Length: 122
Image 1 (cartoon, rainbow, N blue to C red):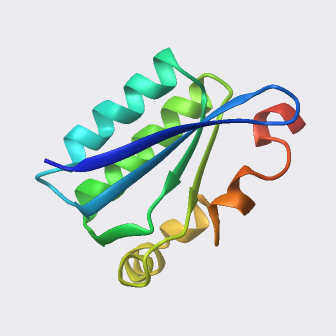
Image 2 (image 1 turned 120 degrees about the horizontal axis):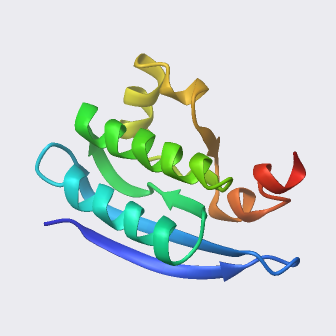
């Protein structure tokens, strides 16, 4: 079981952004729960998602797959999918797999929330 904190942020132009902060390991035993949470948020609450990985100290290919699936779901509905505050131990996995070039990754949650979501700007 993975703990996932969920908060809502409203941008200056009125868009709702869901911030998900999972804690612990994002691996084969927990990735499916996280994937379901992403699907639920994107389909029912907002197409704009920020995933704060500051409390995830381990991520494997299953965890990365759940993030890719969430990004694709958000893209399908012209939303945005941003990752922030990647734990140093998890950051290595993003770099080795070159997923750091696939995702929009920000240092802080504030930076991820700043500005216009990508879909609205284009």
